[in-house]
Image 1: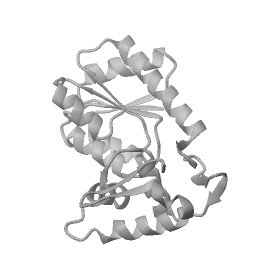
Image 2: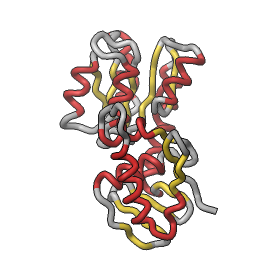
Image 3: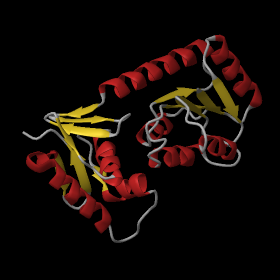
Length: 223
């Protein structure tokens, strides 16, 4: 199932018609509120997201999706008239998987959607890997050198977030927002405590999680 959030009815109907012609199940929404309501009971395989929505800024909606573990892995394709390099960079940095600028051809849209769906299926089948560490999203299991690790929900979500951004520095504030779902002013001890517990679970491989002094953490293969 593909969800399309687009406030322009002519564009939305054209996208939905094109997807249906290509045998893709799809549903359209004219605003962020209706989309979020549908998301409570259904999880799409991919989201086509316009940025200029009447009720909820598309970029804010993107951040909400990526901060919720239930939607953080859904492929998101931004389809927007905002076509500057800056807009594209911001969208991709905030978690979009692809960005297409209006006006665009329907065949190009279908091609990009198919590519994202193939990538998503492959990722779920193979899991995420970093050195001897392997995470299987579907079963929510983690292995290190073939040994299964027993992690709490928050520990798994934290490790998953780090493994989605291997070799990238993630700030404590970003981790709080993504894993706990809120911005936390001042004290970030919560993150440090959970990082410490996660390192203990990794035992001899705890050095996979590097501390970036004054900023946060990053996951990388230990030498």
